[in-house]
Image (cartoon, rainbow, N blue to C red):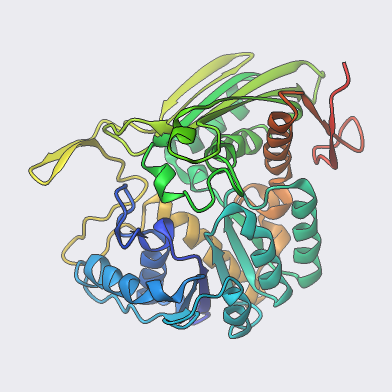
Length: 421
């Protein structure tokens, strides 16, 4: 790809982008952020040129710049932190992404890490400007919006994908390949993911108002299921239940935990499988920021993966005992340089940026990446349908929701309807 660099607009200024939360460093495993650090390293490695960042409240930017200097510039050698910011430092503008995107050109990249209910409008604005777009999970909250993004991406000839870095976790990737090649028809999956109670404070601006814990966390294992079972099984029915109490005691009207029970249908013989996805944001603080694990059973075998515990623990005078996962992000420098390039948190963005560079160079097409190598907008429809059906089931007192397909063999749901017994 040579000198075929891309310009990148980061949309969102929060924990995953900068590590800056509540006026300081996030109390999580992402205190230095992920997106901005990765983009600055891409510039050092000649993959990216101009870097921009847009949020809603420009008054945060002086603090963000100081935070990034302290946690990135002062930690790693040769990091150019030059970054254009929108809106101005004295402005508050929820539509600032429109102005920011207008300063970028077709073929540039937008990386969207914002509250769930804003993904659709931001992504569509960037797509219509001819930008390639990567959106954090969930890409959108409704099947209708997902279908609109698919159509827009096709019309503009751009690459649109979901940032689901778990696909690059070697444990998950190996489990997926084993399930597909060795374990036969799908039988059962249980996926669990949680975060500690203080995340309710981190996300209090939108928790229970514009999204929920299922969209935020269940989306991880739902994507794993969709990716693993592509061409093997399809989801046909979703039933949701929840637990409540802790968040409401904090004045936040939202569920504490959400469980989605999803009926799957094996395509080869119409036999059935069941997947149960549970997510929570009322866990206690523990040795990990996020408990993450799943159990998968096929007709010919089973797999257990505990992503939270990799056999590496750290204890220091300045911090509590912790189980760490350098496979996700390696923040410790090597000889003064950032050396997390092999981490799957970085590779997720690198694979997307490299794909965009290939498309811009004319050596690839967006549809080339519908083969599972990226979580493209065209190959993640089931996940969005499951998440929306789960929300609709909860709002209907647990009534099951059916996913509707065009035919017996179709794998792309076209609508959702309440199940009739």
